[in-house]
Length: 635
Ligand code: WT7
Image (tube, rainbow, N blue to C red; front, side):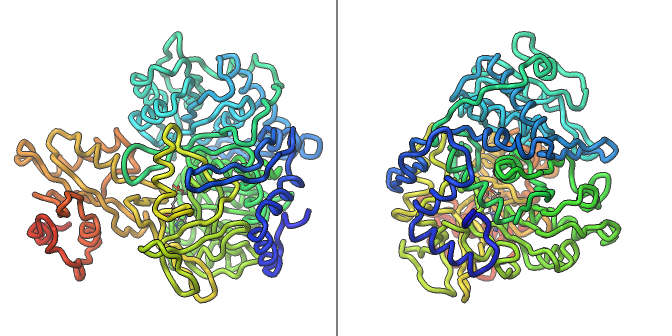
């Protein structure tokens, strides 16, 4: 079991050095000792960041579900794989053992096969956080179908775009979902989306809320009766190491969402290895990540990473505020959670509430606290450390991305001394570098720059579905032979990294990655709107909130401004989803533009943040006079 489980700082440095000096030998050893393969690889790694082309464990054959399920059956068959904690605390929690999960996955895999889903086909999954969601991912993986999970908070328009981009032939959804005191009619959203998706032949529907729904006779079927009839065993499809496992969409600074493609073997090895070390998972621990499986955090650290380690992973259907603000703490106490992984935005929201919500619960089971999705500010870090961890549970501030597949920069708990707001050190095998604006590497410490990674790691996304050129242009052209993250970072005197935020036009709101382009497009579709620009501004709970600058057409001039604001947000909700709503909307008569017509977002960002002291040189703008007008009317 050499190197698999790092236990002290000296060992970290030793293993890190080894992983960087000879990455092939290092990852080969990890892959060999901790996973089951149907055939061994011929070559550990081949890569070329110019094309770009990255292949790990080429020639190997495997099925990831045999690693996540079958191999545990002899030793962990009766161990709980998934704890399902429902939205309503009065509904009983479910404990699904590895044996039961295996059976459920096989049944669903057989249902998919019965519906003509074959290896390589794309299946869209649009489900709330219920066990069927995890089962659906694994069922696809069982038969070699590529899953594309769309977060069930996205609108019908956003869903349709994603279904069509990757040509999904089948959709798995539910009648509805429970979110706190509300329920949402998911099937209605799917029906609307599918009006524009001719390629979808079947919809399999999980019954969750019991609400009455429309069923298209030839297309839609309730899933449960099919599962009941299906065989409880399903032979795993033998996959190549580099066969796609899933597509997951993420926002870009321009254009349509990018379908990041993750492949099988490297993704499995890296998510499993990081899970083990970053959470210091031990055999009888209960691990809980509060993310939704609709995001990469859920794919890697609710489903694949934990299950590949034979862990017990908790799935929570609800929200932190229901039935009251003590729900997270209640769940931790109830299931004796040992590792708790959440987002800064949730911590900030809960820190605003009375401490009593927390104090009445026994949180002594906690050993590790995690943070992910956005920079964690000092205040939130201390609140988390003092009140949740009682200064006894190290905080792992984990930096990574949809594109990286797994955690990249992070402390290892009980190993790496932590510093508030610092993601600290690169994980084993990760080689971060900071670059300056002239594409030169900035060496040494106490420096800052643009964060790049100079060597491939096993779970890097391999392409953007259907658009390899965009993959190359987005990540591999800014700096030669480097993967560019889009983030800025600083490296302090001891070599610790602190992520300072996006350097492109992606805005992180409540830990959700939002691109400006689709939001602006949906605003511009409003009949009264001529043009718009959105930027982020600091928000005490969400991290960033959205500020929109909107130019009206003549027809809009006479309209009531408050009504227009409501309509614009309604439009965004329908096109993108409620998470992209604007906090502030300022109507302007022009936007600051460069002579080539590019909107100067830097200036708009400063005005939105109420920081107009140093706007820089605005005289080169096409329309410098507009700046003062915007400042004078800022909200
Ligand atoms: C972007 C990626 C990683 C899974 C969830 C988000 C920001 C993420 C941190 C962190 C500072 C962070 C970055 C990154 N981010 N984690 N610990 N500290 N910033 O995945 O939606 O692909 O977003 O989230 O800006 O580039 P994503």
